[in-house]
Image 1 (cartoon, rainbow, N blue to C red):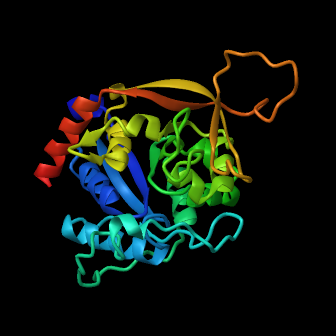
Image 2: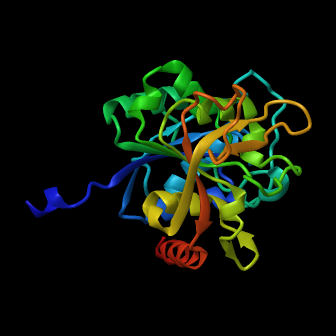
Length: 289
C-alpha cells in the first residue's frame, strides 16, 4: 500500500534544441527521481532541428537511456518561416562544443514531435508536463493538431521571455520567444497550465560565469517550491522592432478600453528563485550522471 500513497513521479517530455545547457538539463532530469522522462522532442534554436535530433539521440546513448523515444520537431516556424535564428556561435557547429561525436545508432520515432505530444497528453490526461527549452513551435503545432491538447496536457514549463528586463537577442526579446514569436503567442493564450521561466529569473542561476537557463527550468519541474510566481495574461509582440517582446498584464491596473489581453487565459510567470539551492541541486545531479 505504501507505494500507492507515494507521490506519483511526474511524467515529463523535454522539448529541446541541444545545446550544451540543454544537455545539462536533460542529464539533470534523467538523474531526478521526482520526474520520469517519457520522451524528447526536438526543435531548432541552438542548432537546426536535424542536428538537435542527432544530439538528443546521442545524449540518451551517453546516458544509457535509449529506451526513451525521440520525436523530431518542426524545421520551420509556425508561419512556415525558414530563416531561423540559430545560436551555433554559442554552442559550436555541432551544438555540443564541437566534440565531433560519432553518429548515434538510434533513430527518431516515426511520429512528429507535435503528434507525439498530442498522443502522450491524451494517453495520460493531466499527468504530462512539457518542459520546453527552445522556441515554442512544436507546442503551438500540438495545440493546432488537437483542440483538446491544452486541456489534456498537465503543465507546460517553458524557458522564455524577459519580463521587464532586457532580452538577450536584443533589448526587447529573449532568444526562444524571438525564435518563433507567433508560436509563443499561441501557446501563451491556449489555455493550458503554463509556467514561464524568463531570463529575469534564470540569469540569477549562475555557475561560475555560466547561466544555467535550461537546467533551472527542469528544476522547476522537479521542485516548484524553489521559485515564486506571479499570474497574469502574457501576450507576445509578433512584429516590428519589439518582435518577441513578452508583456505580462499583472491585473493591478484596470483599463477602460477593451484590450488584446482581455478574455485571455492567465499563465504563471516565475519572479524569484532560490538560486543557491537550484545550483546545488543541478551540480549534485550532474555529478551523479
